[in-house]
Image 1: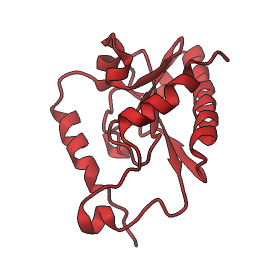
Image 2: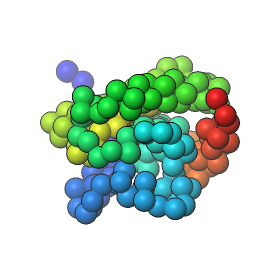
Image 3: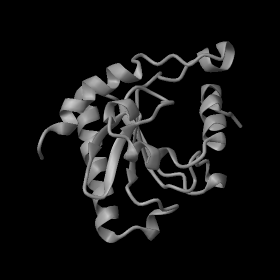
Image 4: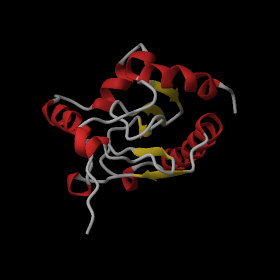
Length: 162
């Protein structure tokens, strides 16, 4: 059996478990979306960059309501999250030309959720060969773009009217 490790995420996991309160609720309360990397605010959900991305353009969609699982969400919220997934895929395809995507939710700590009490959807662009030896051997993750550059590149596309 082969294992894929992500040692660069250790800092994130340690931070999340020490943090008081919820990172998503905290981001929602901020007046400066750029500071929290919030790209879009819908009627029931919002889109933001993952601060510890697997790849450039790693997005998350989270509901405004602090719920631990999507089956607790109102229908209009869960329908909107799927619409926002489609929006994210379209923008990321256009801007970054990935070969594919990983999308999904980790519901509960045992499923790998770093933030288990506020469900969220991950959208991760993927390219053939985007995994390499650096994280394993060098304990270094190579991300081609920093978060501020990614935010600036994507923001105008999320602000366009549908």
